[in-house]
Image (cartoon, rainbow, N blue to C red):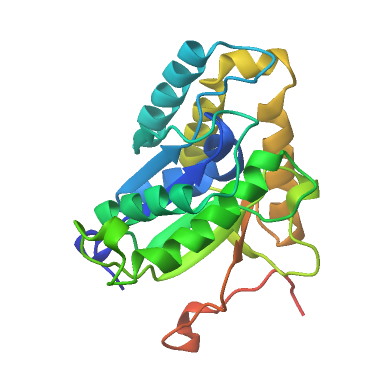
Length: 241
């Protein structure tokens, strides 16, 4: 068992101010409670959103991060709904990876049936993780290379869930965790004018949980096969034979 001091940071990237809370807020709250440092990077300020100004949405994201116990920063790329796949962006993300030195990174899934900023950011993060470990890049020479242990993708909607790929389910059933997650989502009050995203995401987590015999669960999809030291940590599955 790892103690809190042994837990490497978790670095999570979101394209918009509310993406991480809605899609992985329960996981983030749980990791923080376990003693892990979680750092959020938001790559726009929601400039294209129907509701909420960039100033309002930035403030909401900061409040939500405080609820979850995470740190947060905002990165200027191309702006909401204008994100492009550029090597310069991947280098910026790689610089953050080298700064934070995470063991685990979360990024939006790569399926294109979602907001185009989401899958593009997921692609950029995947590229950045590779760049972060290359020692000879002049663009990153001021920072030491860093190798990330694992990249996991999250999905903001059923349509964004990778097709034909089995997810890992993270059990977030404890009422305290669910409460923190809900409070973090509710911090994005401007977005509730568009749709009740809080109940939508709670319902998704409830379905994922019930399918595994749990109260609530959030799915993550590994970019690479996870490696375990033994079968001891694999005692549970989503099916009871």
